[in-house]
Length: 64
Image 1 (cartoon, one colour):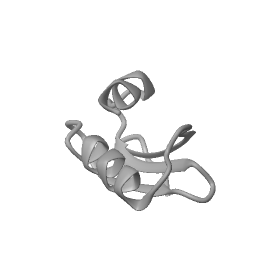
Image 2 (cartoon, helix red, strand yellow):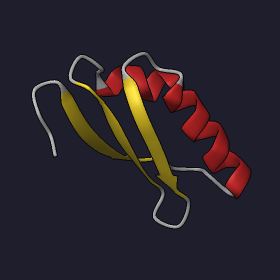
Image 3 (cartoon, one colour):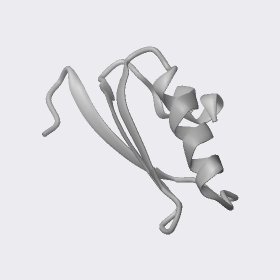
Image 4 (cartoon, one colour):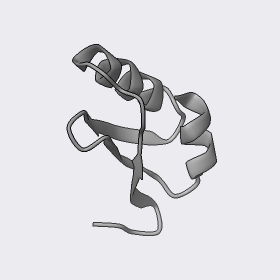
């Protein structure tokens, strides 16, 4: 559930080819300050990120 302090953002990730790609993207997102959880789905090429409200989509995109 989203609150002013915690949000969930989903976005597309194009170009992943294997489970190793998924792991690298999840680790990169997890290193962004304020990110609590990053889950990436290879089949749908989507990332779901739970984070504090201050983390921008641009910052998460830069990380990956």
